[in-house]
Image (tube, rainbow, N blue to C red):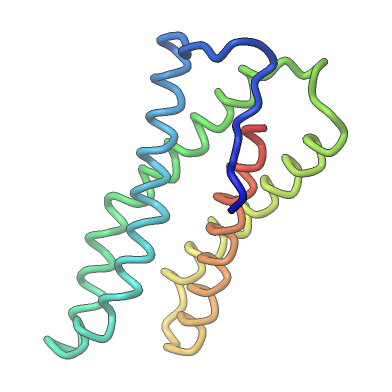
Length: 146
């Protein structure tokens, strides 16, 4: 059985207070944005069973939470970027960061277009695009923690 080991440059240390705040807010916002989309996707069939317009009503209620969470993700993402010692960043880190930013744009545009279109097929396509961008951004964000 393989074991996973965390590698530290020196002895492991606790994060400072601002790092704890920054990362906690970022993770909380990601929980709402990513987790909420997954939960809502799982509830669509059940909501349609309640009434035809229930998914739309729930989606609009979720938007009141999810878009501010997306804004918080952007703000804390900038804060995370500014907190990095860029002289230490490797070329691969910079490439993955650039790809992650592209995924964030795809996630936001997919979600936005999903709310604007009226065709069920287009809604499904844009939901898929947004969710793919969201999951990719999440995974790449984890990779960037090095």
